[in-house]
Length: 128
Image (cartoon, rainbow, N blue to C red; front, side, top):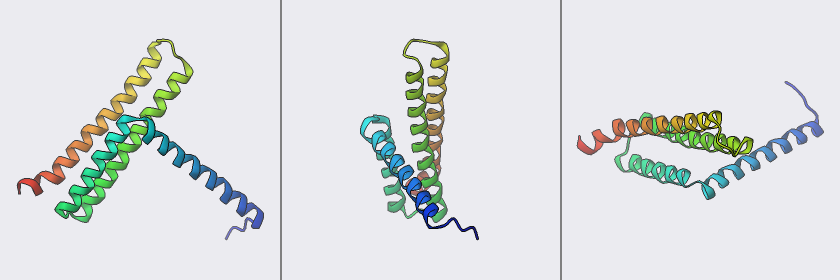
């Protein structure tokens, strides 16, 4: 077992605590400033409510949770890439447009995938 010593262990925990606080701050910023992120949160809550209502299987719930995490993560990556692109240049440039368009495309593909997952899981409960 690796022994770091008391001082090094405290420093390691302090760095992780700072990283955790920074990450929570990023999530809070996304919630407060990004309307699309809030829409995804509402849709995620509805999906989880539907999972509870229909008593979906454990596997279906796991797939829903993974899909929700994927969608929220993709939205945050999209936002980060757009912000970084704006930081690098505010003028119109083909490369900046490509970065933003590809990032938005990633989010669109993720949203379509989430819609397919929701349909495959919930439609049998609704119509079956």
